[in-house]
Length: 124
Image (tube, rainbow, N blue to C red):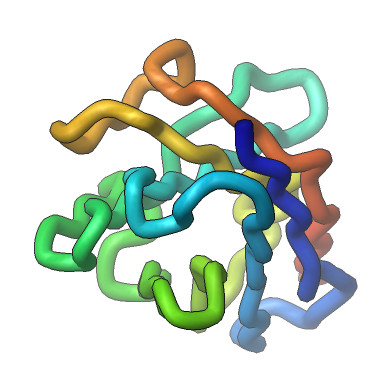
């Protein structure tokens, strides 16, 4: 069992930046691949980024590639999402999730634990 708590969301103007954090407690953090997902109003939750257990493998959704950076600090039990050049279409609730599988996944059904989400709102 692992508990996940996101923070760092807020209101930002288009072109700005935010850094989301997801703090994990419970079982060994380094035993999980960690993903970020987001859900915009009226839309399905979608994959944003994933980082493998050791940080070697990282994948992004095409919509955020080149603007967002996922990273993790296993010593601090925390995964981050640095979001630059934000656009109004990035407005969503952002969730972090933990996956116990060895391989990295981009499908939300593969993830075992979820945080409560943090709101990101980008104004135009």
